[in-house]
Length: 170
Image (cartoon, rainbow, N blue to C red):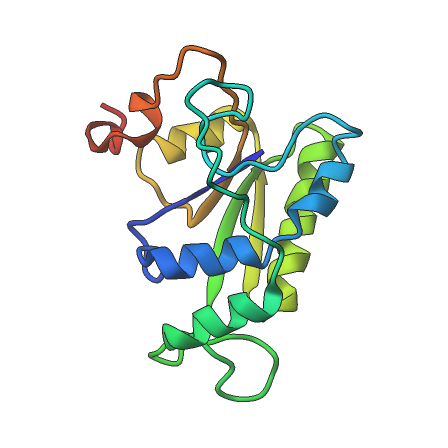
């Protein structure tokens, strides 16, 4: 599982906001749904690969650090309702696209919603079939976050995933 954050949409264009959201996710608990399959990632290079950086650790689960990082970016609960607002006072809502073809994907989306709600972020989970979701991710990019699968093998080629030339589906 990987979450693709749309860094064209403020405040997700801020790497510290994306880092805060990652800190708020209890990824160890998410792994329990995998029944022993999977490891916490510290980046896109798998731990079995020769190019894996031994000095990089996966981010910890730290909701307090997540809240502090968001507050440093002006995202905080201004009216005491437990939900975060952006610096302009509008609610911080993430439109989260998730494939709903199986129970695992639906459960993962709910775990993400719950973890982010615990720090005050509202997550609007929009379930859809995978092909519809990928068409949006590679096309008009109306999503804020998309729940995708991510795997690699010994041949690492991340151009299609990370190169700016592929942002608009080119």
